[in-house]
Every structure is written in structure tokens, then in C-alpha cells.
Amino acid sequence: MYLGKVIGTVVSTSKDESLIGTKLLIVARLSETLAPDGSTEIAVDWVGAGNGEVVIVSCGSGARQTNGHEDTVIDASIVGIVDTVEVHGQRGAA
Image 1 (spheres, rainbow, N blue to C red):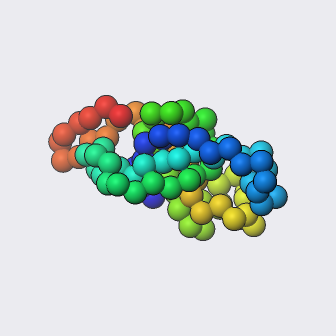
Image 2: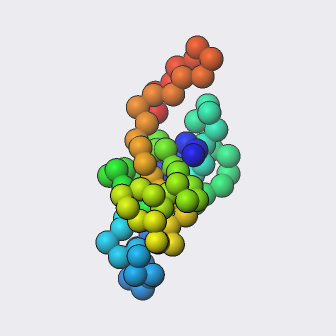
């Protein structure tokens, strides 16, 4: 899993059947200090995340186990919206 920030959406009318009805978001990977690391990924949103929100992203087989989608092509899922992050006594709002 990693922290990410939602920076956009993806609309795809032609896609694998297992993705029909899913919301696809572009997520920028963040460090533990919430600084962008330069990489992005498309993730399926299961929690109603919006643009600009800091989220928790699960990858690989863990991403497919969300909401019973074990037989899909999903490789990244947004599984949480972050309220705060605390690192070694430092606290930051997401």
C-alpha cells in the first residue's frame, strides 16, 4: 500500500468487462511527508474519493480482493481516504 493524492479522473467507454461500473482516478504517489515522488497510477475508487484528497492505495492481488473482485484486471484500488498522517511525532493534515 502507499499514500497518494487524487489528481484527476479517467473516462473509458471501451474497457475490460470487469471494469464496467468502476470509477477510475489518477493518483500521484506521495512520500510519508506527503511530498509527490513523481510517479502516477490509475486506481479504481471504492471509497468515494475526490480530486485533491490524500488516499490509501492497495496494489496487486490485495487490490483485487476489495469488494469481491478477485477475477478482475484491477492492479490498484483506493481503499481509504486519509485524515491525518503522523511520522515520528510530526503530525500533518492531509
